[in-house]
Image 1 (cartoon, rainbow, N blue to C red):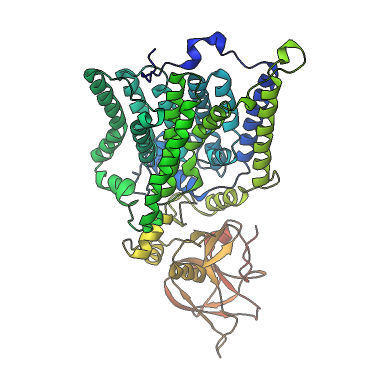
Image 2: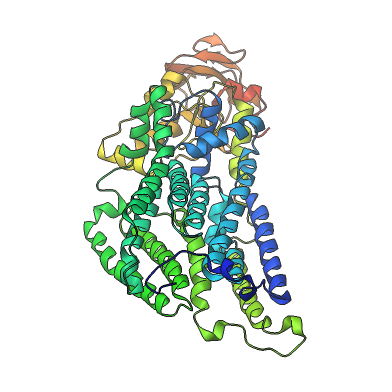
Length: 580
């Protein structure tokens, strides 16, 4: 093969005898790391903190199961493929507080494919042993482990991304390979709009590759080049166009385009408010190319170096663009980067002679394998320790959300609306359209989104709200605190009545949310006159001014949504929790 021709022939397949499976010691270590990674994943499914994005996605999926249309009937600002694929599973599981656990468990097959795809890329670029090492270390990277446990479309996007790279780097470039990789990239784009950064990284890597390897690639026949580019673009656009066509058929193309594109573009959001920061992308890219050139010079074979350099350019370009060009950076945005990071760490380490196996005294099966096994063990132990330090085994970050869903299902019927910030109630409609995520809040502050939250709550007679209200605007928070009582992880419509009465013994109060209410004391139902009539049980109260005259002096009275009392909740009138 000519040195000037950057062919993509898999290194691991050229001579399997030259790239054997790891020896016994390393096989044992690898098996242990894979087993520990799976055990930790299963454990943290039930203990890792729930992220607010998880129930936002679940609420959208639930809406699909109820015949509602994403973007038009429920707000969302993500691409829809993940939600559409999840809907049949959620419909089969049904409405249960354990849904968050179940859907997290459903992410494990996707993660296994990501790990498998990482091994495939590593095998084809660096050899079998390097592929296995990268896959084992990937599963224990603390942030990858934590974020890939969560129920989010970034996991599906990462799976398609890694599969696309494994196809693209799997052999000689031709139109069928380009079509397959383009289709997988299109599916990644249908899962997350942040795939734009991945596509940009591929383009930058392709342009910078000749500079990084220090030579021009071999000329490609024009017809072959046109066929490859056309096939790749065709595969890329098929999934997004199919999704857009689906919403167009249902009369919601405008809503689809707003939710996925226009809503997310806020010129002064995050990094975009500091335009000079984007100028740092150029020197960052120079550093990436310098590092890639070093990798090319230290490659054992030119063709291996070309493919690995391309991977390094993709990883570095994506990382730099995410931090310097993308408006909002979150740690889960790095999920597509971590497989590449694991491959780079393993591949770069192999360039240093001291990291390669050296003769070690002992029986033949252990010869030349123990040093690599020891290094792999130490790295794995560091990762495991880091995971344990970040989330100690005794920590449980799931209890509150499960309790919230338990109370929502207990206190409401299908069709009852529940006020929350990002769809925490999952299985119930929301009285408002907007979801209080970061971009929506920024748009509310600038005035481009005006959501009459209080008016919608009153119009829909929403008598239940989630306990956490910190993302709501200040006027809305005051409205909620004024009209709801805290009950564990939810708030029920009601209020503590004033302690003082007028000269005639009447306690005046205002109702803003029309509903059926009960008047309660610490000991149980109150006795007296409600609006001048004997109080004998829950009564529907219209919005406006009302008065209650106690039959006997009590320290405190509370007005509570009657449904909460009927279904086993018992209020204490000092704004603490209700108890069964």
